Length: 159
Image (cartoon, rainbow, N blue to C red; front, side, top):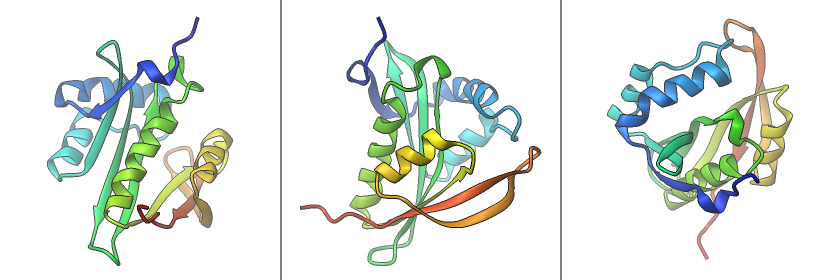
């Protein structure tokens, strides 16, 4: 029986889990310059917003967001979302994305991200959350040379 997202806790990413983030990066993005533990540490040092998805205290996913500027001109950028392949397709990525978007909306920030043009599940998830393709970045991912779509989502006002 597979677990559902309801058993997963989305919490502030713990520094103790940065090594696990780097391990997941190797699995998920090994062909495209995966982030190291020090890259994640640098992101936290810069004050960017990072979350972890935890199942029974074990990190199974992570996501990061940078917010720049102030409303009404604030912009946010999704820096990364990664989910352990054993837990993909169970709503973990959606839960992480929703939490990032809540943070962006608190700042009334337009949100941007890049996604591989061949990553159809991610593109579908982003579209379902209000993102639209606004550009193409040829050979964005290195060393594979894969192209990326730039996607954008306007801030959602709290009701």
